[in-house]
Length: 251
Length: 281
Ligand SMILES: Nc1ncnc2c1ncn2[C@@H]1O[C@H](COP(=O)(O)OP(=O)(O)OP(=O)(O)O)[C@@H](O)[C@H]1O
Ligand SMILES: [Mg+2]
Image 1 (cartoon, chains in turn blue, yellow):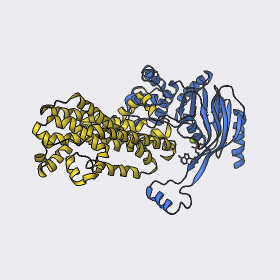
Image 2: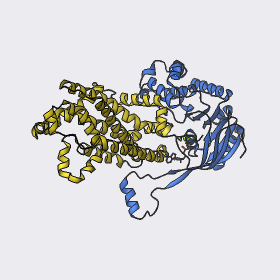
Image 3: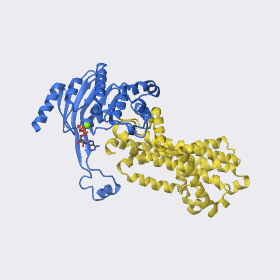
Image 4: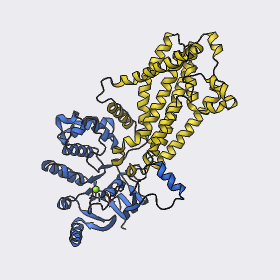
């Protein structure tokens, strides 16, 4: 693996396994212990295997792969929601992740309360949020809905608010997981412009999207995952054509 | 820096703003759409008090043998309620906040702590009512007694946090945890001298009485009695109702030590289990 001067994310032989069948009661677990721990209590499978890569600060990386290949899992590991089972993962700088639409929103609270809650979770202080509040609402174009409970928002409005908060936290590493899809055309353009602006300002970007053309315009580098394994890492155009070649070969 | 590896309860101290927002969120969500709102936190203990007072104080005539039984009863109920609410909420806090925990990283200890905090918000108005009632019957506590009040509060808060961390974390893996806690909460009202006086237990347990005193809730409730109930008694009544032996000198320090130990155990278990919260919820 190449050594990078100023790494933002260093991922070394990361493995993540998930339990497929869950036991939710003590009874089952006790019976299993009494029976002499025969068999596996739960089936496991590897969502990520032996994944290693380094992202330098200021790089823009597209994370590509088919459904279920482990992209979201990888982003969750980077954001700290999940912990790797093996290997190590290091990050430098503040991370803002848009892993799912409305992650960190509480649907019974108003948009205003959620801006504060989500902002605080992403590491903003009270005074910063006070200061940024109007700008956040303006960018999201939520207008008077800001005092409505977010459960009454449309998915696009969710996304707008979430995206707006995330970009206002001024993160050094920005993770985006195929959420832009629910925004309408003008807002997608606006987000794209903002993402490009962040990239130009030297932020590290990690974008997951199935819109390969969009991703090619935003990112320089591509990483391709297949069944939890990293199979290609290089300039985005090469990785995109590799993905296309592979999915055609499947048919 | 490895992401998502917190420093436990110390993170909570650092993230006080986030804690404040979570507490506010809990209260808002709880009373959303309710007309009486926070008033419910007065009504419930008052009803409970009335039921116990009629059943035990009047029907079983504990009121005759215990002077100022109403104050005796209410001071215990207020404290026990704080504990049951705090522990119950803290145990459920992780599972109930799974939407947040699954999708975004924040120090997970915040949730049980916020749950205990919310219960404290409910507890303080009740405490004020209790103080008011005591003042009417001529309550004049000493400085030491005020200190004991704070100690008793901390005992209960820390105990509920410690047990809440433990059972809250286990609850993610085995939802049985909730039911175990419900059972503990059913017992706790009877396992500490809230409804009756401690000497009745001593008569029965004899030399095993120390087991009863090892319960930190017993100590906390007795401290509350010492703070609120004893100052309202006159000399003759005081002679008839002695304090439990060595309450301040021996059992309070023991209860404090036990409680802190429980919190450490809770914190250690919580940290070990919390690494996999997001995928298990
Ligand atoms: N908490 C979990 N428990 C069990 N399995 C899980 C869990 N989270 C993810 N998985 C599994 O891990 C695999 C990878 O999922 P992941 O969400 O990372 O895929 P993805 O690459 O983001 O796919 P998509 O393109 O559909 O978003 C899937 O097979 C999924 O079922
Ligand atoms: Mg995904």
